[in-house]
Amino acid sequence: MSGRDGDVIEARPAPLRTDPDSAARAGEVRRASGTWRVVVLAGLALAAWGAIIAVGRVWGIHLMSDGRKIVLFTPPLLGHYRTQAPALVWLPALVGALTIAVLPWAASRLRWWQMAAATTLASLAWWIALAVADGDNGLARGLEWEREYESAVRRASVGPGDFLRTFVPNLSTESIQIRGHPPGFPLLMGVLDRAGLRGPGWAAALVLLVGATSVPALLIAVRDVVGTDAARRLAPFVALAPAALWMATSADALYVGVTSWVVALLVLATGCDRRRSIVLSCSAGLLAATAALLSYGMVLMAFVPLMVAWYRHSWRPLLIAGGVAVVLVVALVPLGFWWFAGLAATRAEYYTLDVDRPYGYFLVNNLSAWALALGPAVAVGFALLRDRRAWLLAGGGVAAVVFADLSGLSAGEVERIWLPFTVWAAVAVLALAPSRGEAYLWTTVQAAFTLVLFSLVGTYW
Image (cartoon, rainbow, N blue to C red; front, side, top):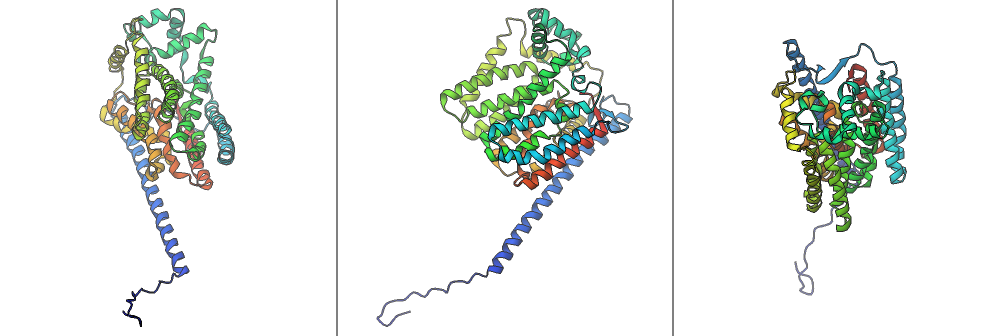
């Protein structure tokens, strides 16, 4: 339109008035919609988690009723049914309650290293309480020292060179645990033996302490990838993980400690200056070689740092660490041990065991047992996790499990065998703890689930 002076005046619409009440109601609707979405996803995740456990259990019971010798006894786990809860079940219940009450608060207020130390001590207390409550020398019983390790450790102590040279040719004469692994563990125990630290007590102490170092390693990696706040929120879940049922009772806890530091060092190496990165990568390579000589399946731990390296476009640390690990493992060839020959011999021995473990069933049952080791909170965490950085660590653990499952070499007992992968997959619970209140809720769920499982099933580890 035109004004009095002939200028063109642009017609502008009148500004819209905002109704504060309408805006508030819209915000409430969005929040309610988001809450319902979370509730639905959580419900579906719990249903799926329960279903996979139920399938493994029902299918296993059916196979056992048909006379199939799957050797689990309490599918999907290897264990025995308890007629009543252990008399000392109050001990882990007390430790769990104190951890739930104190650690979320402490994790948000203590200095970083104080927080990591507190989480490590809380984890140790939880592991030990569960093992001690199980009775009958619970801390060392899982090693089955006399039957599985004593003879091999004595030979490794007296003549480590001879033990290494004859390891593959004489593998069929060894115990089941020796046949299922490289020679690293008996050689390590042989070193303790030569130092005068003999017997299952010292072995259990080493396994427990090295396993406990996985806690700060995990927190360090999470802080570097996801952030300090995320590591602090994760701490209570690390301390009260259901996997604790097997952490203080088997040699696999040692593998958890070693591989956790391999991952942590490589994660740090992908995000720092070149000189420090080389040092960290070489250290990771040394530990990676150690892990490969402790358990053949530990090579799958490479998936976790691979995910981080891909995300950060930093491949040099993995190449350096891989090169160091290969050189160290190959260096044992002149001493009489070739890693791939050991793996082939172990595969051959696996198929001579007097057990019936059909591939199709254990493909499912392994996931059933793993679901129990993770707990319900992790299942919900995977459904709600949206942080890509957290997925790098959790997804790496899942990828390792998928390959281990498909390989067919993991058939039963994965609740302990997959512990090194479990600790990284559990990072998914970060989706559940945006506030301290929710951390209290979900850590209580995890601890209560662990105690119920502990009261119903006694494990052999």
